[in-house]
Length: 294
Image (cartoon, rainbow, N blue to C red; front, side, top):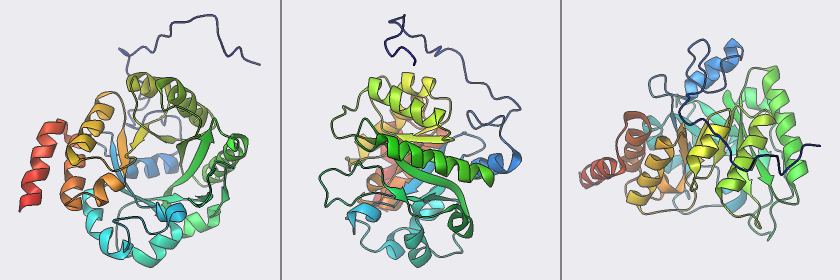
């Protein structure tokens, strides 16, 4: 068993050394993957910026009708042109998203307890198998993994099975860090959680932003996209996105901070300017205000 304390207190994250690109493929950690897996990742991540804006609308699978998502068929399709990837559950996609929408789909394939339970961390189970994901034309599989919670072993086992099934068909997996209710959202926790998901085979990791985030992204061998989390004022959400990208994130997977904005379309575009075009948070917020006012 590895010594969890280690012999060295200080850690060197080599922040001055860029990760290898191998054959020039832009997605971190993917240089040795086969063509089909790379092709799907290339649809998710912009070839110029190397980053992605994902729109998460999977909240209803545990929360029911989230504010702003009462009508998926009304809210989500108009936002699709402003983001790279749509992330949702198959029932929502089938019933509410026109099949003519061209965005690649990151499909949530796990299930978890609903918000009716105080403890949601039993690890969940498989809601959609690989055959169902292929029928949904998914380019990525998403599963939530609880670290530091009672269901950790079960959810890691589920992640491993999803990774294996995806690998068999060249479909990447995004591991979603779920924070156990007794765990603090600290650099120490996210260093552990993101590394565990990556080393168990996740090709992309979705995590929260924290202080010391540049260490988290450096130590994770695959791309990290940040979760938007709870609704923030638009300027604050753009600042969080800017700091995350500046500190090594390769995108955002936002939900409430886009569809609960006063002008969701303008917010999606403003986030894209930060993620892809190098806009500062202040410049992106100015764009948001100008666009929302029209």
